[in-house]
Image (tube, rainbow, N blue to C red; front, side, top):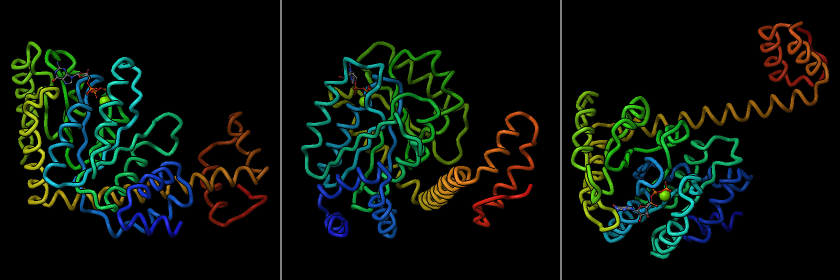
Length: 320
Ligand SMILES: Nc1nc2c(ncn2[C@@H]2O[C@H](COP(=O)(O)OP(=O)(O)OP(=O)(O)O)[C@@H](O)[C@H]2O)c(=O)[nH]1
Ligand SMILES: [Mg+2]
């Protein structure tokens, strides 16, 4: 493991790939590299790209990667749940595009499946981001499909949130309004070669105006990702947002908040592990839990008693 970590710090992409898998699977080696990497983080600009299935997020990610790579920047890409059930047909093309991308030097793509992940997607994403950051990536792009709770949480890991839509969204905007709609920093109407793009831009602008955001007025951009149209403007807008974050001190504040959140979720995870272990090794507690299930014992008394038992490291017989 030491050798692997050393190669990682020397910039070996093979070591990066292997350690990313360790981190994803939460192995001891994964935690070891995370422990040893924190001092090297804080540099990367984390950009989240989200929006409905098939909006063209991956195509845009590809264009952004090419533009930034041409500027000599190093990029990490995280695709959260790339096996979207909605776009079965587009998947193959997606994979080919991504393969093509990952052949470019200085671009590394990591897929992250949400299925079977109990530790929380946002937490896993945060750890992978941390790894890319420690590796020396300048930009980390996170693509998530959809606009549900998972995506919302994942976007909380980002500095800059880009919401991608397509022309003719109409009513769907209203339903999105409460969630991701309000945290996006940049709005993109992709597939602007389709009818209704101008109208969608106007609708969006009106909604943004109503939201009355403080210092940052989120721009609404039109792109045709497949023809590389409008993508330079998107690159520029993302860079403007980075400058805004740095000037307004939000850059630092977001990092502080994320670090604290990660600590909290780790403590909660460790505690819940201890909790399950404690129950397993305490038949008395199992009996008490059964009594709570039957409504014979109140959970309000048992909960603090269990906590106390865990803290005392008692292995048998506690009184409540
Ligand atoms: N006409 C047109 N088609 C586009 C544009 N951008 C992307 N597409 C096509 O739309 C389809 C979906 O593009 P993707 O980039 O895979 O979309 P996505 O949002 O990543 O899709 P999921 O990850 O499956 O949600 C592909 O067939 C693209 O070629 C565009 O600007 N105009
Ligand atoms: Mg995609």
